[in-house]
Image 1: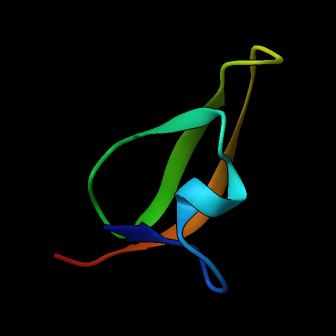
Image 2: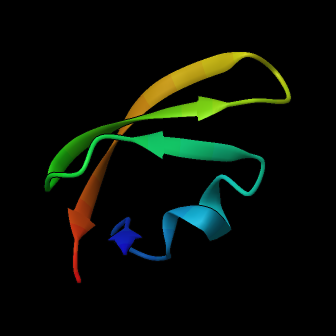
Length: 45
């Protein structure tokens, strides 16, 4: 599961999806606005 510092990514970006699978920066693609940005995440099983 991917988490930001305060919440699961799904809670932060409910209309997007995460590319990547390692701790550090993951690229978040927000489908509704066609935006993307990098946020720090932690990957846990």
